[in-house]
Image (tube, rainbow, N blue to C red; front, side, top):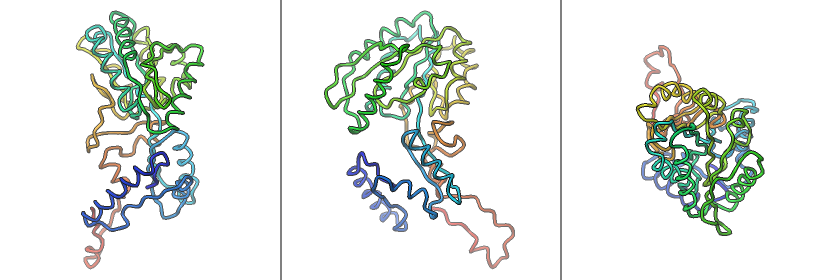
Length: 328
């Protein structure tokens, strides 16, 4: 494992805990190693002994490592989780029935952990109609009362501010609400509104993840336009649908579209509710990951590195014991 340069002391403490667990479980001493260095990641990907790579980080970093993995004399798989804006869709009846509750819960979700969850809902899609203005008003009020937060490290805060500056410079993106003013080393909560036409045109900025406590609201005219917006989205880790009983037909027609776009589709929940367990799927089509087919649950990720299917066809009896595979 390569330690992240942004929190090397934390990485070292974590590595020491893993090494103690390795000893306690009686596993081979070399089953886990942690390496520190700026450019060592590329060298690890190129090394002939490495047969698979896992990566969590930026789209640019994931693409660079993926190209290195494919350019080797023996190409290897790279399981990368990179970029997602995780659209959250609110259908008309849900908007009318629980506008205020949705607004408060949504702000709590996209500001959780400083907005640094990779499943943070960064795009809010709502159909115009009864309840929308109440929802927007409550959303702005919740953002206005949100306290500033300290992000992971100085580069993360810098990248957040660069993303905010890019949104502010866009001629068709409007700032709807700002949280309590941030100090020198803090990130301010922000809510923006973009135009649906730009989303349909696949404006690059609207598809770009901004790591931090902000989200983008887009108002949609009708059901046909909502479906077109979903189809225009890139691959995502999650897609969320808030609906009531009367929204059933529209929700049912959106479901297959959302399943094509995301690795996890949620109903009346929030994507930042993540548990590391066998049932959790944490993946999706490009650019969320490099390979949507790859295993993304906790056990699936482990098996991707530890297990490879091998068929032993009719070995003689004297070889059968040697052909058995041992699994941990």
